Image 1 (cartoon, rainbow, N blue to C red):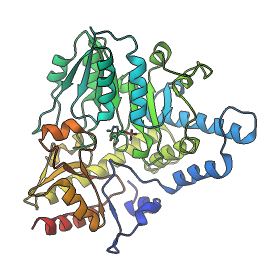
Image 2 (image 1 turned 90 degrees about the vertical axis):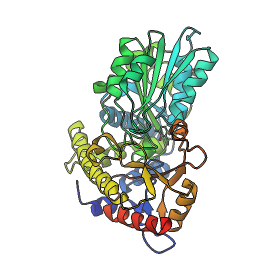
Image 3 (image 1 turned 30 degrees about the vertical axis):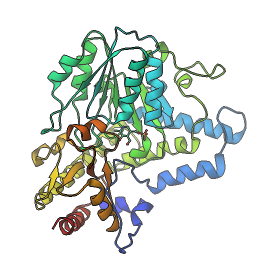
Image 4 (image 1 turned 30 degrees about the horizontal axis):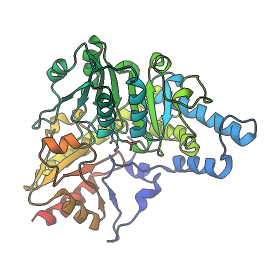
Length: 409
Ligand SMILES: Cc1ncc(COP(=O)(O)O)c(C=O)c1O
């Protein structure tokens, strides 16, 4: 990957100084990523010059309509699908609620729903609520607390011919595990069940390929991958055509538009192509192509795996700090550089507050991955989450370790 200094120089937010005069360390990546200059510019350009609703005959409206088309095109390359399979929404949670309403319209009490315990509740509650409305059985698939991973046998037991939907997280936003979603899709499809994948935490770390996964639905939230606040759902064309969304009567009946209710944030939409272009630029090649996105993500993965190994090796210097889930440096391929930590004798909130005073931005608590904290019996004290992105550095890890050393000594 390019020199990380050159990458960081594209992000104005990374120049922020903490109260101690040192640069802020952003370890809050799974909560939100920062945006590079080109994305900020695209976002502002829409607000400054083109603010209008889409679909009209006048110039700013025509420009807005074209911006939406460009965003869809960029996202179809990003996810490897057709432009008509891209549904834009307010945020991932709202999108999943919307899809769960439409998909469950004709469920009966004989149907079953499978949700998973490494998931953010954005991909749990909407399905549980839909199941409640139709008196459907809900089965939750658990994970190994020592490994932080799923066992596929558990999916084979949980999914039956009555299962209508399997909701699964591609990567866990609390402890970083990357889940075997392709295999889970295969098991689900053998039983005729559909699969809704939450790729919100996965997207900044690995390339999405919905064709390869063969999933039915997949959601990301662009603010987690260097863009503005907007969600994107991939849905197979046949599902967009066959399921009936809740919509207002005068709105378009075409796909994907009939799934997009109300007026979206056009400034966010207009910044999507620049977001994808930024990611492709990490390939060090010119142009936004699927090939360049592949290379870019290989570079991201290689760099982030180095960060993860360095982090895990350094962490062993701290006797009172423990990593949840995958901790073997040989296994960093199977995780993102998102680490769920326990600090002996301290709540996650006490530690996060101490870190904040030292200019280290990190989250504490449950991050809506409620079953994860429950499984580790940490609902009260929470988990300290150190979440890195490709713009973080080994120097920052070193600084974090020395601050934590003071706190725990
Ligand atoms: C894995 C995961 N899924 C879903 C969400 C919810 O996304 P949104 O904030 O767009 O509703 C988050 C947000 O943190 C997340 O990390």
